[in-house]
Length: 121
Image (cartoon, rainbow, N blue to C red; front, top):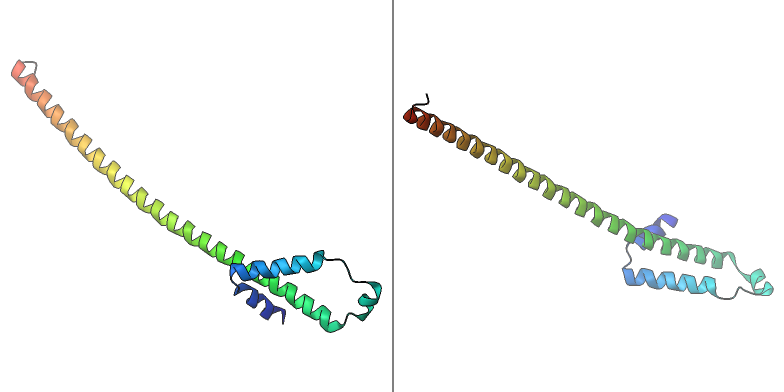
């Protein structure tokens, strides 16, 4: 069936798929059959060519699916990395805020102390 041909195409390696595509391209690029040969073409021959075409299309689709799957995995992995980077950045900003707050308080306390010693307060 055409579904089996599609599944077979998905199972092919790149080299095999390219070879099938090349053969398909060569056969379609060759000179067309003569009128007598056209009349003699059997239904079985047409069916075989159709199956070959479906098989070629199936293998190409499988490779595209694998590429899409790898792209999805890469995107998911990158999204995880970005989320981790955001968490790290958030923690860094929080820590920086706390240190700045502490430094500002210490500076304010020191200024009060100096002001009292100098008699400004």
